[in-house]
Image (cartoon, rainbow over all chains, first blue to last red; front, top):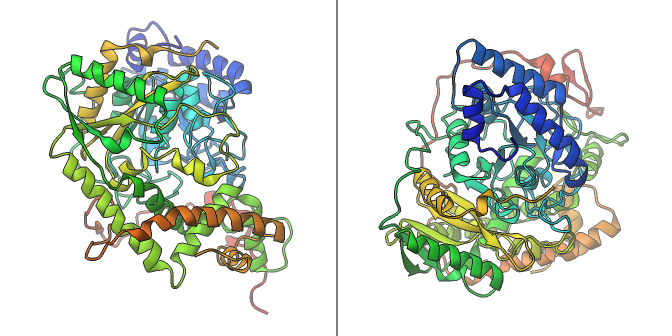
Length: 483
Length: 95
C-alpha cells in the first residue's frame, strides 16, 4: 500500500477494496515505526486521524464520490488546522492549538482527505536544511547523515519514506523544490496567488506560496486540484476559473522548447548533479524536445535581493508574536517592553532572530532606499530576465540545488553558505513564477538529484505534463529508500 | 558598512528581542556576514527602474463594508497566555 500513487489509492477506495480507515492505519503504523529515527512529524494524533477517516468512509457509504475522498495526507506544520497543535517549528507556538482552519486545510477536508499528522519544518520556514526547528532536526531517509533540505523538510522526508502518500508544503525561496530534490520526490511551487495564504503562517507574504509534494507529477496534479482556488480572505488570491491541473498530463512533448540558462550550469554546480541534470535533458531530447541556450543575467543578484526582501517582510509579519494574544510568554518580566523582549528572546530561535534583525535594519530610518527600494528594483530586473527568456522557450530547466543533500551540521554555523544553497530556486519566487523539482538520478554519494522545471505564469498544467512525460520514460520518481 | 556592537543592540531593541553581551557579539559577526552578501546589490545601477513590490501587478480587491466574521472571542482567547473577563492581560502600562 505504501508505494501506491494517489490515483491507485483512490481506485482502491472507489472499488471498495480498501477503506480510508485501513489506509490511515497502515500509514500510522509506518509513521510510528519510522518517525523515532527520522523526526519527520511534529504531531501525530491517531484518534483524530481515524475519526477523519471514518467520516470519509461514511461519506462514501452515503454515495459521495470525489477523486481523493478518503486518501490521507500530511500537512506542513505551517498550516493552521483546527484542533491540531500548529507550531510552525517554533517554541513560540509550541503549545498553540489552532482555533481555525487554513483555506488549504478546509479544501483538503472538503475533499475528504484525512490528516495523518503535522510535519516538521525549519522554524517559521526560515532555513534550507530543517535544522532550525525547535522540535529537532529531520534526517534524510536516503542517508541519515544528510539533511532532508528545507524548509519543508518534514513533508519531503515523510513522502520519501512513504510515511504518507503526499504532503503539503510551502515555498518562499525554494522550500518545496529544494527538499523535494534532496529526498528524491516531486514538488510543485505554483504561480503566486493560486493557493490561498489564509491560515498559512506568514513568513514573507509577497513570496510565500503553498503547493503539493508527492512521489510523482501525476500525484502533484491531483493534489493541486484540491489545494488551489480563490479565497477572498487572502488579499492576493487570484480570481481565476478553476482548472484541472491533470488535463494535459498525457500530451506528447514534440516541439517543446527547453531553455537552458547558462548561469544555472556554471561555477558552483557540483559535477555529479550537473551530469544527472544533463542526462535528464538528453532524455527530453529523445522525447521530442529541443533545447535553447539562454541567459538569466541577474541570477547572481537573486540571493542578496531575497535576503533583503524576505527578512524585511518577516520582521513585519513576526511582530505579531508579542506574548499577548497567543503563543509563548516569558514567565518573568519587569514591564511591558521587558515582557516583549524576553518573550521574543525565548520564543524565537537564532535563525529567526537573525532574519528579524536584518529586516529591522534594512527597513530602519536612513537605510530604506539603499536596501529595500534597491532590492525591489532588482526584483523587477530578475522578473524581466524570465519574461525575456520565455519569448524563446516554453519551459526553463536546470538543477534545483547546486549539490545533493549536504551533511547534517555542515552549514549550520555559516548562514551565508546556507543561503547560497538556494541560488537556483529563489529567483522563481521573486518573479512569482511556477517551478517544480523532479527526481532525475543520484549523486556520487547515493543521494538524490532534482531537475528544476520553471514555467511562465499559470503554466502549471504544462509543467506537470512535462514532468509526467519524463516520469513515464524513467523510474527515478518510483525509487524509495529501503527502511 | 558594518555594524558595531551598539548597532546590534539598537536593532535588537527595535525588534524587541533581548540579547546579552555574548549573543550581541555573535550576531554582530553573523549579521555583518549577511550584510556583506547583500552589499553586492549596490554595484548595479537601477536608475529609472520601477520598484516591484509584488509578483502580480493586480489591483487590491474591495469588498462591501459589512461584518463577515462571527464572534469567536472565547475560542480565540482560550489560546491567550493570560485573559480574563474577555480581556487580554498585560503588565500595567499606565501608572
